[in-house]
Length: 205
Figure 1 (cartoon, rainbow, N blue to C red):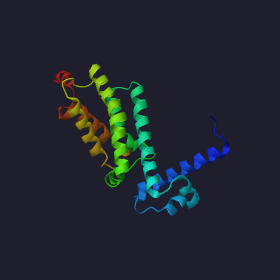
Figure 2: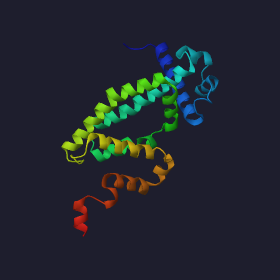
Figure 3: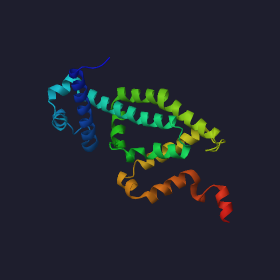
Figure 4: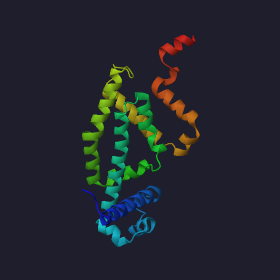
């Protein structure tokens, strides 16, 4: 059903509020940001914010859920595009540094340790949406011979998560200005310290 002008403006205001809240939370931290700060930044009244969200806590949850869904959609569309495994690893691990809006990992961690409702939502979403798609990706990579078929799914996911955790500690500016560093990290991920797959090393000897 097509929305009328009033509904469109209402949806746009909600979007403006959430975008403003995301930027302020990410920059200042959730505790420091007040509803009045968000209203000023988004160009709306505090009353308008409370018409959309009953509390600051509800707004925070909505912002986090929206960000999570956006990141999942990027991942899902990439998997459906039939990208190679190396391309997808680069996307999964480094996408946050390429995005216009990237989330400070400490912000999400803060929410997951203080908001049980959000934690349960994220855990459920991971089990029912993200994990099945990720397993599908790894199985496809195995069939194509892009990863070692003898490795367990558990060990592969542990390795990917460990790399992503470390990557998140590096300032985004480093990745954008140091492509050589990015290339080195990807090289280490796929070939370790050996310098390349066995076939490449044999040809150079």
